[in-house]
Image 1 (tube, rainbow, N blue to C red):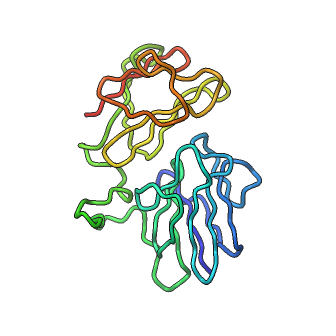
Image 2: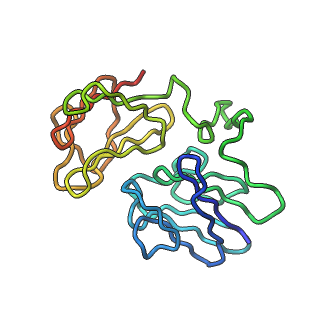
Length: 214
């Protein structure tokens, strides 16, 4: 029986057997697999089990669904594929005798078709791809936070929440939740991702954050 192993920050959360034709994944409690994080949409994705194969399909989520570090709309899964939804990693197992690849493996990462290293299994991206956020104003002024996850969320639920998403070598910011849209260099952001550049300032609930790319 195929299954997914769910991890968060390297810690095993749970496992789910894909014994239904459609297994839904999302933040809301009516889903078969509930991922409780603001970066996860209410109905985020579904896993379709048909003809002894499993396909992942994104359900028009806000932050997207990634397989082995690449954004997908619909994709057939192979054994040991890693699905990224928000900060969660879902490792797919087809149910064969081949063991699920450990997320904390110390082996060198695989290479994609272009010869570039695939970074989805690394604990942290390489320094060249690792951005960070510096708090410019507020009680935590001067503090810096490395952006090591695929999605990092900031703000106060119900007031204003923003997410910074890492895709390949770029970082994007977008409004996730709340009536007050975060400001990017003084301009209100939308729910569509906006590319971040070195020194960009994000104002969120009165706190100013500065994006640093290196």
